[in-house]
Image (cartoon, rainbow, N blue to C red):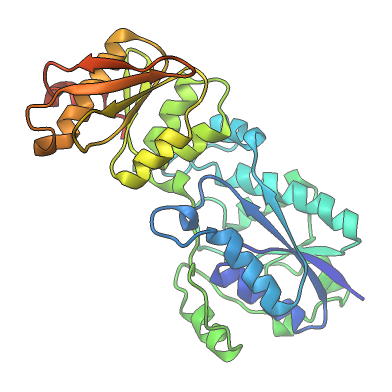
Length: 336
Protein backbone atom coordinates (compact mmCIF):
# COMPACT_ATOMS: atom_id res chain seq x y z
CA UNK A 1 0.00 0.00 0.00
CA UNK A 2 1.31 3.45 -0.97
CA UNK A 3 1.27 5.78 2.03
CA UNK A 4 1.43 9.59 2.25
CA UNK A 5 1.44 12.24 4.99
CA UNK A 6 -0.99 15.12 4.52
CA UNK A 7 -0.75 18.50 6.18
CA UNK A 8 -4.42 18.91 7.09
CA UNK A 9 -5.59 22.22 8.51
CA UNK A 10 -9.29 21.45 8.22
CA UNK A 11 -9.74 24.24 5.67
CA UNK A 12 -11.13 23.77 2.19
CA UNK A 13 -7.88 23.44 0.24
CA UNK A 14 -6.22 20.82 2.43
CA UNK A 15 -9.48 18.88 2.70
CA UNK A 16 -9.77 18.71 -1.09
CA UNK A 17 -6.12 17.73 -1.49
CA UNK A 18 -6.55 14.83 0.93
CA UNK A 19 -9.75 13.63 -0.75
CA UNK A 20 -8.13 13.71 -4.20
CA UNK A 21 -5.27 11.48 -3.03
CA UNK A 22 -7.51 9.10 -1.07
CA UNK A 23 -9.57 8.70 -4.24
CA UNK A 24 -6.41 7.46 -5.98
CA UNK A 25 -6.27 4.56 -3.53
CA UNK A 26 -3.42 5.94 -1.44
CA UNK A 27 -3.34 5.52 2.35
CA UNK A 28 -3.24 9.00 3.85
CA UNK A 29 -2.12 9.89 7.37
CA UNK A 30 -3.04 13.43 8.42
CA UNK A 31 -0.79 15.78 10.35
CA UNK A 32 -2.31 18.90 11.89
CA UNK A 33 -0.36 21.80 13.34
CA UNK A 34 -1.90 24.11 15.91
CA UNK A 35 -0.61 27.38 17.31
CA UNK A 36 -1.72 30.40 19.30
CA UNK A 37 -1.92 32.35 16.05
CA UNK A 38 -4.58 30.44 14.09
CA UNK A 39 -7.44 32.74 13.07
CA UNK A 40 -9.89 29.88 13.48
CA UNK A 41 -9.16 29.89 17.23
CA UNK A 42 -9.74 33.63 17.45
CA UNK A 43 -12.79 35.72 18.21
CA UNK A 44 -16.08 33.94 17.74
CA UNK A 45 -14.86 30.68 16.31
CA UNK A 46 -16.37 27.64 17.91
CA UNK A 47 -14.45 25.76 20.57
CA UNK A 48 -11.52 23.83 19.20
CA UNK A 49 -11.00 25.85 16.02
CA UNK A 50 -8.88 24.31 13.27
CA UNK A 51 -7.88 21.37 15.43
CA UNK A 52 -11.51 20.26 15.68
CA UNK A 53 -12.06 20.81 11.97
CA UNK A 54 -9.04 18.72 11.01
CA UNK A 55 -10.17 15.93 13.32
CA UNK A 56 -13.68 16.10 11.90
CA UNK A 57 -12.34 15.82 8.34
CA UNK A 58 -10.04 12.94 9.30
CA UNK A 59 -12.94 11.12 10.93
CA UNK A 60 -15.17 11.71 7.91
CA UNK A 61 -12.51 10.32 5.57
CA UNK A 62 -11.60 7.48 7.93
CA UNK A 63 -7.91 8.37 8.17
CA UNK A 64 -5.60 8.63 11.20
CA UNK A 65 -4.53 12.07 12.37
CA UNK A 66 -1.71 13.32 14.57
CA UNK A 67 -1.87 16.80 16.11
CA UNK A 68 1.33 18.75 16.80
CA UNK A 69 1.56 22.08 18.57
CA UNK A 70 3.96 24.74 17.40
CA UNK A 71 5.73 25.21 20.71
CA UNK A 72 7.99 27.81 22.22
CA UNK A 73 10.72 26.81 19.75
CA UNK A 74 8.44 28.24 17.07
CA UNK A 75 8.40 31.58 18.88
CA UNK A 76 12.13 31.89 18.25
CA UNK A 77 11.40 31.52 14.55
CA UNK A 78 8.83 34.32 14.79
CA UNK A 79 11.36 36.41 16.69
CA UNK A 80 14.15 35.99 14.14
CA UNK A 81 13.07 34.41 10.82
CA UNK A 82 15.77 33.59 8.29
CA UNK A 83 13.54 34.57 5.37
CA UNK A 84 11.91 37.64 6.89
CA UNK A 85 8.31 38.69 7.45
CA UNK A 86 5.27 39.27 5.31
CA UNK A 87 2.96 42.23 5.79
CA UNK A 88 2.72 41.67 9.53
CA UNK A 89 5.09 39.63 11.67
CA UNK A 90 4.39 36.44 9.73
CA UNK A 91 7.49 34.33 8.92
CA UNK A 92 5.62 32.30 6.31
CA UNK A 93 8.59 30.66 4.56
CA UNK A 94 10.32 29.76 7.84
CA UNK A 95 7.01 28.50 9.20
CA UNK A 96 6.58 26.13 6.28
CA UNK A 97 10.14 24.84 6.68
CA UNK A 98 9.42 24.27 10.38
CA UNK A 99 6.30 22.21 9.61
CA UNK A 100 7.80 20.31 6.69
CA UNK A 101 10.78 19.20 8.74
CA UNK A 102 8.44 17.67 11.29
CA UNK A 103 6.32 16.17 8.53
CA UNK A 104 9.47 14.58 7.09
CA UNK A 105 10.19 12.90 10.43
CA UNK A 106 6.62 11.63 10.62
CA UNK A 107 6.89 10.39 7.03
CA UNK A 108 9.92 8.31 8.02
CA UNK A 109 8.19 7.09 11.18
CA UNK A 110 5.20 5.61 9.37
CA UNK A 111 6.98 4.59 6.17
CA UNK A 112 5.24 7.10 3.90
CA UNK A 113 6.58 7.92 0.42
CA UNK A 114 5.67 11.60 0.09
CA UNK A 115 3.84 14.58 1.58
CA UNK A 116 0.58 16.24 0.47
CA UNK A 117 -0.42 19.85 1.07
CA UNK A 118 -3.39 21.98 0.04
CA UNK A 119 -1.13 24.79 -1.15
CA UNK A 120 -2.22 26.66 -4.27
CA UNK A 121 0.32 28.41 -6.46
CA UNK A 122 -0.11 32.18 -6.23
CA UNK A 123 -2.65 32.09 -3.41
CA UNK A 124 -0.39 33.54 -0.72
CA UNK A 125 2.20 36.09 -1.84
CA UNK A 126 5.04 35.12 0.46
CA UNK A 127 5.13 31.34 0.65
CA UNK A 128 3.08 30.06 -2.28
CA UNK A 129 5.34 30.97 -5.18
CA UNK A 130 7.46 28.57 -7.24
CA UNK A 131 10.72 29.98 -5.88
CA UNK A 132 9.41 29.79 -2.30
CA UNK A 133 8.28 26.19 -2.85
CA UNK A 134 11.81 25.29 -3.96
CA UNK A 135 13.43 27.00 -0.95
CA UNK A 136 11.05 25.36 1.51
CA UNK A 137 11.54 21.90 0.04
CA UNK A 138 15.32 22.27 -0.08
CA UNK A 139 15.65 23.52 3.51
CA UNK A 140 13.32 20.83 4.86
CA UNK A 141 15.07 18.06 2.92
CA UNK A 142 11.96 17.23 0.89
CA UNK A 143 12.94 18.16 -2.66
CA UNK A 144 10.57 16.47 -5.08
CA UNK A 145 8.55 14.85 -2.29
CA UNK A 146 5.89 17.51 -1.68
CA UNK A 147 2.79 16.97 -3.80
CA UNK A 148 0.34 19.86 -4.16
CA UNK A 149 -2.67 18.19 -5.85
CA UNK A 150 -4.61 21.42 -6.48
CA UNK A 151 -1.79 23.09 -8.43
CA UNK A 152 0.26 20.07 -9.54
CA UNK A 153 -0.15 20.76 -13.27
CA UNK A 154 1.23 24.26 -12.76
CA UNK A 155 4.40 22.74 -11.28
CA UNK A 156 7.11 20.30 -12.26
CA UNK A 157 6.15 16.65 -11.69
CA UNK A 158 7.12 15.38 -8.25
CA UNK A 159 8.88 12.10 -7.52
CA UNK A 160 5.63 10.25 -6.69
CA UNK A 161 4.20 11.39 -10.04
CA UNK A 162 7.31 10.38 -11.96
CA UNK A 163 7.35 6.97 -10.28
CA UNK A 164 3.69 6.36 -11.02
CA UNK A 165 2.58 6.37 -7.38
CA UNK A 166 0.16 9.17 -8.25
CA UNK A 167 -1.75 9.69 -11.49
CA UNK A 168 -0.83 13.23 -12.59
CA UNK A 169 -3.78 13.35 -15.00
CA UNK A 170 -6.15 13.30 -12.03
CA UNK A 171 -4.50 16.34 -10.44
CA UNK A 172 -5.43 20.00 -11.03
CA UNK A 173 -3.90 23.25 -12.25
CA UNK A 174 -5.49 25.77 -9.86
CA UNK A 175 -3.76 29.14 -9.79
CA UNK A 176 -4.27 32.32 -7.78
CA UNK A 177 -6.40 33.58 -4.93
CA UNK A 178 -9.89 32.80 -6.20
CA UNK A 179 -11.48 29.74 -4.64
CA UNK A 180 -14.13 29.27 -7.30
CA UNK A 181 -12.53 26.08 -8.66
CA UNK A 182 -12.10 24.63 -5.18
CA UNK A 183 -15.72 25.31 -4.29
CA UNK A 184 -16.88 23.68 -7.51
CA UNK A 185 -14.70 20.65 -6.77
CA UNK A 186 -16.05 20.50 -3.21
CA UNK A 187 -19.57 20.30 -4.61
CA UNK A 188 -18.50 17.61 -7.06
CA UNK A 189 -16.87 15.57 -4.27
CA UNK A 190 -19.83 16.16 -1.93
CA UNK A 191 -17.75 18.12 0.58
CA UNK A 192 -20.22 20.61 2.00
CA UNK A 193 -19.06 21.51 5.49
CA UNK A 194 -15.92 23.64 5.47
CA UNK A 195 -16.37 26.44 8.03
CA UNK A 196 -12.79 27.66 7.62
CA UNK A 197 -12.48 27.90 3.80
CA UNK A 198 -9.38 30.09 3.64
CA UNK A 199 -7.73 29.55 7.02
CA UNK A 200 -5.24 32.15 8.09
CA UNK A 201 -2.76 33.31 10.66
CA UNK A 202 -3.06 36.17 13.09
CA UNK A 203 0.59 37.00 12.49
CA UNK A 204 -0.48 38.50 9.14
CA UNK A 205 -2.82 40.91 10.94
CA UNK A 206 -1.09 44.27 11.32
CA UNK A 207 -2.97 45.15 14.50
CA UNK A 208 -2.37 41.82 16.24
CA UNK A 209 1.25 41.91 15.07
CA UNK A 210 1.81 44.98 17.22
CA UNK A 211 1.07 42.91 20.31
CA UNK A 212 3.42 40.15 19.18
CA UNK A 213 6.26 42.57 18.40
CA UNK A 214 5.81 44.30 21.74
CA UNK A 215 5.96 40.96 23.57
CA UNK A 216 9.05 39.70 21.74
CA UNK A 217 10.92 43.00 22.13
CA UNK A 218 10.20 43.29 25.84
CA UNK A 219 10.33 39.68 27.04
CA UNK A 220 13.04 37.15 26.34
CA UNK A 221 11.45 34.04 27.86
CA UNK A 222 7.94 33.96 26.43
CA UNK A 223 5.46 31.56 28.03
CA UNK A 224 2.39 29.80 26.64
CA UNK A 225 0.23 32.03 28.83
CA UNK A 226 1.81 35.11 27.25
CA UNK A 227 0.72 33.83 23.85
CA UNK A 228 -2.82 33.05 24.96
CA UNK A 229 -3.18 36.51 26.51
CA UNK A 230 -2.28 38.19 23.22
CA UNK A 231 -5.86 37.45 22.15
CA UNK A 232 -7.44 39.05 25.21
CA UNK A 233 -7.95 42.60 26.38
CA UNK A 234 -6.42 45.97 25.61
CA UNK A 235 -2.63 45.97 25.84
CA UNK A 236 -0.49 48.81 27.17
CA UNK A 237 3.21 49.29 27.88
CA UNK A 238 3.93 51.64 30.81
CA UNK A 239 7.45 52.21 32.13
CA UNK A 240 8.50 48.97 30.49
CA UNK A 241 5.72 46.88 32.07
CA UNK A 242 2.84 45.24 30.22
CA UNK A 243 -0.66 46.14 31.39
CA UNK A 244 -3.70 44.26 30.07
CA UNK A 245 -7.22 45.61 30.63
CA UNK A 246 -10.27 43.43 29.94
CA UNK A 247 -12.72 44.40 27.21
CA UNK A 248 -15.61 42.25 28.44
CA UNK A 249 -16.56 39.62 31.00
CA UNK A 250 -14.92 36.84 28.99
CA UNK A 251 -11.64 38.80 29.04
CA UNK A 252 -11.98 39.42 32.76
CA UNK A 253 -12.42 35.72 33.47
CA UNK A 254 -9.46 34.78 31.30
CA UNK A 255 -7.16 37.43 32.77
CA UNK A 256 -7.88 36.27 36.31
CA UNK A 257 -7.37 32.64 35.34
CA UNK A 258 -4.10 33.25 33.49
CA UNK A 259 -2.14 35.13 36.16
CA UNK A 260 1.57 34.32 36.20
CA UNK A 261 4.18 34.66 38.91
CA UNK A 262 4.92 38.33 39.50
CA UNK A 263 1.63 39.59 38.03
CA UNK A 264 -0.59 42.08 39.87
CA UNK A 265 -4.37 41.82 39.55
CA UNK A 266 -6.62 44.88 39.88
CA UNK A 267 -10.41 44.57 40.22
CA UNK A 268 -13.16 47.17 40.63
CA UNK A 269 -14.73 47.52 44.06
CA UNK A 270 -18.50 48.17 44.20
CA UNK A 271 -18.93 48.89 40.49
CA UNK A 272 -18.92 46.80 37.30
CA UNK A 273 -15.91 47.26 35.08
CA UNK A 274 -12.83 45.68 33.59
CA UNK A 275 -10.09 43.97 35.53
CA UNK A 276 -6.46 44.79 34.80
CA UNK A 277 -3.23 42.83 35.06
CA UNK A 278 0.16 44.46 35.57
CA UNK A 279 2.99 42.15 34.54
CA UNK A 280 5.38 43.27 37.26
CA UNK A 281 5.33 45.12 40.56
CA UNK A 282 5.66 48.88 40.22
CA UNK A 283 3.54 51.35 42.17
CA UNK A 284 3.25 53.85 39.32
CA UNK A 285 2.24 51.13 36.87
CA UNK A 286 -0.33 49.81 39.36
CA UNK A 287 -1.77 53.30 39.81
CA UNK A 288 -1.94 53.76 36.07
CA UNK A 289 -3.71 50.42 35.66
CA UNK A 290 -6.25 51.59 38.24
CA UNK A 291 -6.88 54.78 36.26
CA UNK A 292 -7.44 52.67 33.13
CA UNK A 293 -10.08 50.62 34.97
CA UNK A 294 -11.95 53.81 35.89
CA UNK A 295 -11.64 55.14 32.35
CA UNK A 296 -13.03 52.02 30.68
CA UNK A 297 -15.75 51.47 33.29
CA UNK A 298 -17.18 54.81 32.05
CA UNK A 299 -20.41 55.89 33.76
CA UNK A 300 -20.69 52.53 35.54
CA UNK A 301 -18.01 53.68 37.96
CA UNK A 302 -19.90 56.86 38.81
CA UNK A 303 -18.07 58.54 41.65
CA UNK A 304 -16.56 55.26 42.88
CA UNK A 305 -12.77 55.14 42.65
CA UNK A 306 -11.63 52.11 44.67
CA UNK A 307 -10.00 49.02 43.17
CA UNK A 308 -8.67 45.87 44.79
CA UNK A 309 -5.00 45.11 44.20
CA UNK A 310 -3.84 41.52 44.65
CA UNK A 311 -0.35 40.14 44.29
CA UNK A 312 0.35 36.43 43.89
CA UNK A 313 0.01 34.91 47.33
CA UNK A 314 -0.30 38.34 48.88
CA UNK A 315 -2.98 40.05 50.95
CA UNK A 316 -5.36 42.17 48.82
CA UNK A 317 -5.07 45.93 49.24
CA UNK A 318 -7.38 48.75 48.29
CA UNK A 319 -6.25 51.50 45.97
CA UNK A 320 -8.02 54.86 45.72
CA UNK A 321 -7.82 56.14 42.15
CA UNK A 322 -7.84 59.91 41.86
CA UNK A 323 -9.18 60.14 38.29
CA UNK A 324 -9.51 58.26 34.98
CA UNK A 325 -6.43 58.13 32.81
CA UNK A 326 -6.03 61.01 30.37
CA UNK A 327 -6.66 60.22 26.71
CA UNK A 328 -3.21 61.46 25.71
CA UNK A 329 -1.47 59.05 28.10
CA UNK A 330 -3.71 56.20 26.94
CA UNK A 331 -2.65 56.78 23.34
CA UNK A 332 1.02 57.09 24.28
CA UNK A 333 1.05 53.79 26.14
CA UNK A 334 -1.39 51.75 24.04
CA UNK A 335 0.09 48.78 22.23
CA UNK A 336 -3.18 47.59 20.72
